[in-house]
Length: 189
Length: 67
Image (cartoon, rainbow over the protein chains, first blue to last red):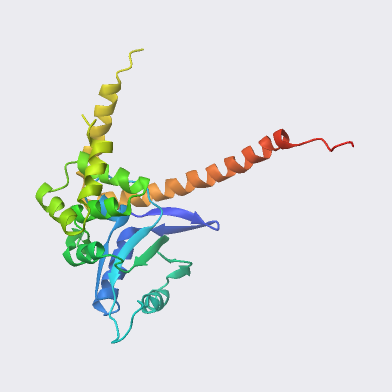
């Protein structure tokens, strides 16, 4: 995969998302995370046309000790900083990309992580949310950019209706979807 | 000059369809390039915003009261 380059403090650095995917695969194989899946705009790019984004959202299930209530992302940060990652606030910068590791915060995201599919990216396996889960998460999140992404999925005909509707029903999103349809899809050609 | 909005919208839609159908590896490489461009635009936008703020400042200047 061709890498682009950008200038950081006058220094040219080659950056590429596939480097991040390889690193995360290794991290999973080493047992630092139980399972990962790419979501957000980068995840959507597996199904739609690429849309500019400044960060990568990676959802992770992490091994938990008995009695542990809060999820501890420190092992991820420790693992990645030992391999060149740099922690910047909520992000860890890998291969020039700010990457945010997100634990599943709702049953919908838990399900999206469990049902994520593996896609071959030039010989590198990458796990990504299904199109239907990406769309449902966008609907649940509900910000303007999420609604725009949901529209892209609908326009591109990327959603299997039966599967999508079942997800909406399971996670109490049917009314929100009806509202979305009323607002954005009634006038669609 | 004729301006057929419907044709323009359809050609944009067609381009998006073509892009969506490209191999994932190629699309991820495009993301790298897009991010590079977005960063450049953001930097330029920040500079522009700063310049605009500097230019608009006199509008808010008030003469000191002479009581």
